[in-house]
Image 1: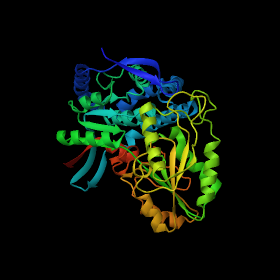
Image 2 (image 1 turned 180 degrees about the horizontal axis):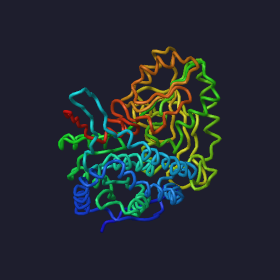
Image 3 (image 1 turned 180 degrees about the vertical axis):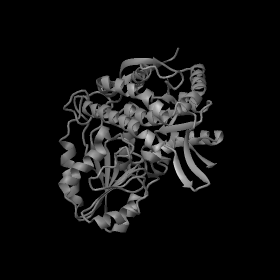
Image 4 (image 1 turned 45 degrees about the vertical axis):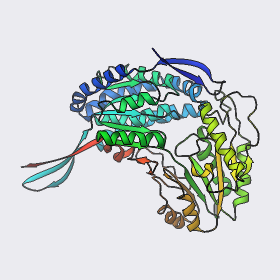
Length: 458
């Protein structure tokens, strides 16, 4: 049987384990079992499904300390951030359990002395859930748990970059006697994902690149099934002249460089009023240059490695394109020392041409291009100068101006100053090539359902 090898990108790509790649026969069998189980899972009802999932949440809680080191070894994320991922997304697991029944309850739309009309939320059937490597545990929670609560059975595919994390997830999911066929997992690269979505499924839930998402959307169109796609992003942050610069710099640093810049919704383009540009650039340079780049298993490390050599090669190409076309390198002028793997120093670029790859493409790594603006209208135009529309940030003490700008930003989320949108009650998704549909909140639950109206006479 063909093996999927897991390597450590922060330790010269050493082999840390392997799993069996799922064969076409295995995928067909798991999808068949999911179809066999979907009616019984639906008919249990939301309350009973949640009762069956709570012990699994408790098992994840009891074993949560097994995840951080595994995630860090497979993708290079600093251990402190991997620990935050395990803890934070377990809280979201509990939130889904605590709120699913409320958001999926029948709704009365009309009632008089003769009749009553209700909206009923019913599951779609078998969901193919495909997640990326950058938050492997977190995206498993987001993709799988609401689907199961809504009544869909799930065939789950972890990224080929972190199969050992996937194995641990599968082990825990199967540890508390979930009915056969309700949850299954497959392993492999994009070929396995394509085989899965071309199988007898009813719904695709995907987080990942825009390229893959568009391909999945074409398959879904041929099958005429529903999708939720959360794809790439090139989120802008606008800094107006009235901001508290030191406070804003700390926020921008976190928003750009968390997980070595490998976050779909991280700030990837900084748009700064010309009157504060020089000071912002200098303060940001000072901030990134004092960060520790190193072994992600060391708790002192603040910047780990990229996930793979191919990611490192792409990032180098994007930066080289900028420098060849006149960009100025403000930070990141030397190679990281004392490490061997997919490491890249936090990099700041100015004198940006809007045709450069670092502006036009999604940059999935610790690189931040910075441009200036003079007027509010120019800032909005620059922010919207992208094929993506996932997130955005606005920094200004003038709240009316910030609200005015927010209304014109073409993105699924806009954060004004320091209010984080990362709450489970908030739907998440994008405009343009950043995706279709929404995850989380009441809207996210209902994306996973057929909406049926039942009207009955009294």
